[in-house]
Length: 638
Image 1 (cartoon, rainbow, N blue to C red):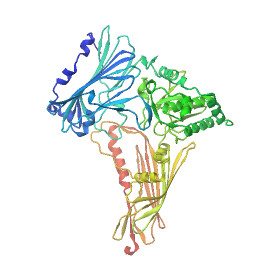
Image 2: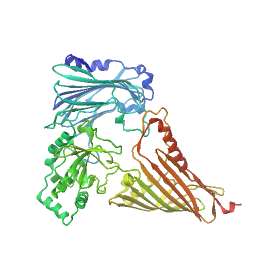
Image 3: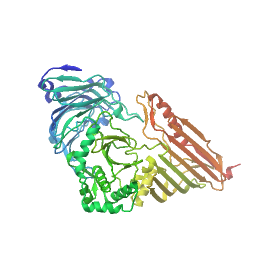
Image 4: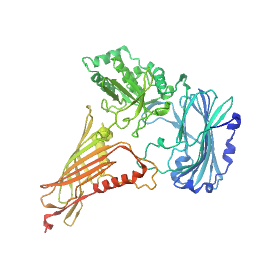
């Protein structure tokens, strides 16, 4: 580390005038940075000054050149604010391609709207938004803004670049605090050490990245956190909306969350306690009791976002949820936990980073902003059970692809614990489809089909649930993207037992599915589950990452008309690779053609140089999925 002794004033003295008066003509950008880029960050300075636990100043100075229309989003500015986050000032300029200022803007040019989403009822957050109107490219926007946070529990992470197709000339991050402040810092994918400035009044650390070329998104790439340069900061002593605390690890953070934010929110009225006890009266098994309570919560409540109070981190009172019958993930988990507590069933309030992309908590670096959702864990004897409390349709004990197979922080009075949610295996993530179809001499098809989905594929039809039939039929047209397909009947059922299964049954018809030329009919046997090939990638740099494996099995039986005979059937095939396997078979039994297909895709991480092999495998699957059977009428047989 480089240590310098200078004054704070010298460190931070850089007015917006000097920052924006520098010319930024586009022709000064190196060709290397323009390559593949839609925009180039010419200069970005992020400075976070932690003056005290309830006074953190973040100053951003940024210059971005937008090269084409696809880069316009990089010129937009969105500033979130609330009672405890104040926007102090904003000013900026817009330059043409030659670096000449054409207009300026201030906070008065921003629109102001609520950050409330469609499913929010209460929310403190609002957004100031600015989107420049520019008619010609390239152009450059230079701006500075300052935000004050009245808390230091959550210090925003810094990323040298968060966006694909954006290059960076120069980006720096400076964190300033008092010399004796204890702060944990972890830099990811940063080469070298930060520059450190230290004296008796303050300590600063600066990370700088220069000449970072734009990167193209690569298909089947791992979590960007694994390879993008970023810095996380967590002060040991913190202030948060009037609360004080201290933590160095997950154990201490989990204890603080439970004791300060959750524990005192779990009081139920005596009447509610008696109600839940009566609900499980006569049930001896703890898991069966918990199931009864879970189903009670699902019927009684609905999910709605409630981002107010203690920065959106504290749940509503359990008694309030009981009275109002709604809540967000925090509130519904807390309510369910409170009901279970009333019947002496212990459970754990767990913070998770939810999403289809699996993300773990950093095992050696605890911080408050690594989770975005709450779930409940029941540590039943020899049968740990997990509950998703925000979904009225979710089966008891089932976590789908939103929260499966990742570490979570369980918050308890005895401390935080890192646990892992159950994984859904390739074999469990099963879609099994069977169809009985009739082909006529004009190439039309009609018949019945049944599909069952389990594991991560259980939710394949989630958007269909509780929709009217008219809307379900519209969704079917999107799900089965086949020309001229119509559905005469549709039924969706869900078995929410220990191994949940979604079952679809339908009657369908497809006009002119198998085209006819002269006396020949050409039938693509795989009508409903074709895979597309994946793009070729030259000079692949990232590992191949298959986030979640699955198994698809299709068996389609086609009954032929009496005056049609087989001219050619595709040969069966079997492909086995490290990425998975694929096999098809085609059999003729009397007047029936039985087509069977099985695709297995394995989850895992593979070297970058294996991408070509993976692409070849998927290309082969795509080709075989298009294989045709050829039939001819008996009149043309001779």
